[in-house]
Image (cartoon, rainbow, N blue to C red; front, side):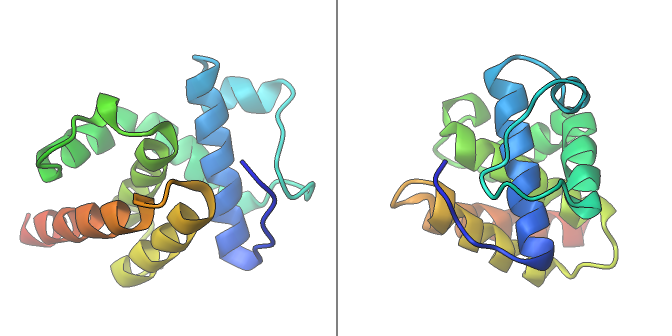
Length: 140
């Protein structure tokens, strides 16, 4: 992951994404990553909102993966690039459990992070999939 200059909740989401990515890459939980050495690209202290998002997304990973899988037409969760997969998990957790953030804000922020950390196709993929997730959640 390369250096980006994010602020506020966008920085918190970026930090949460980095923690989820590190946990998956090392086959550990986010809590285990936090208990050990971890790296954040911005060299800033871990934001409390970022910690909440990372721990929550990790705790609810199976639920998020189920929702992502149902909303994805051509990709299984396992086949998605790791950055995209973890960004989607983070967004689904936020959409389901962080009531003070509007779904549209979560999607917009996720698209921006996809542009920063993902592939050239990531932002369109994340935007489309989260749109379908939002429809499913709102219809539930």
